[in-house]
Length: 340
Image (tube, rainbow, N blue to C red; front, side, top):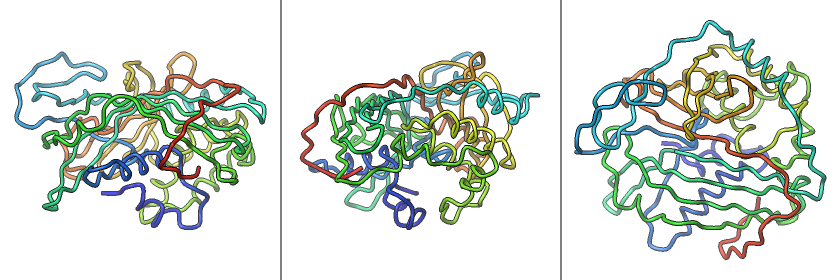
């Protein structure tokens, strides 16, 4: 298992501070009173992700289709029909995504607001050292200072957890309920996720590709690490249009990237999935088939032996619901502290 703390220590030892979503997850899980240790795996497209299968449950049958079970499943299990690889190339799809980019152009004193829905894998190690796995689900809204000099905020709405393939949902998975607010203070340091910092990334596809491969990736193969870096730059951030266009074009050159059609996101929308397989899981970035705007991400098991989960298991699912600009972020008095 890989958790956010491992990512800091092992994969980004000399990089700028890691993502806000990872920080929020760490603080949320490590500061709650009386909670057992929880380790979340940010989807390695990410790793903020996971798969769905309940413990002993009632058998249910649903019609196969995008995002729907393809065969009888136990209660809580989600197994999707694996789409066939499209005749469209990654270069074609990502090229269209690059051509379609627009920019909100926030002022330095404004905030980028990103709303999303997520489903990621989590594991709990109890007092007896026994591990439990499940899928934690949230709706999130984050406010990020455009120039990185103002404190941000994160709103987390906890959704009903789902089961990880082959594992019953542990009782601890239900401890996180309702809505919570997390303050994101800058501590007088500009985050690498600030819009003005992201403007400093390469706007040329070749240089962007070099940047993706140069980012620390730990022990994972370089191509898999580069694809992970693509997702990291799209998740709860807002990359300026020139850099985003370069990012999409650079992503198309990563070996193993192919296209699937009729791919569902966490909000139930259907799009085009561009992704590659790593450790038995196809890790996809999903685009709107008409506008080529970003819809979300997902991870689906394609090799049961490698992924240690049934083929077709949905192991990660997200949806980007909104990206707007606000003049101010909600004021949050967060006693847990922590810097961006």
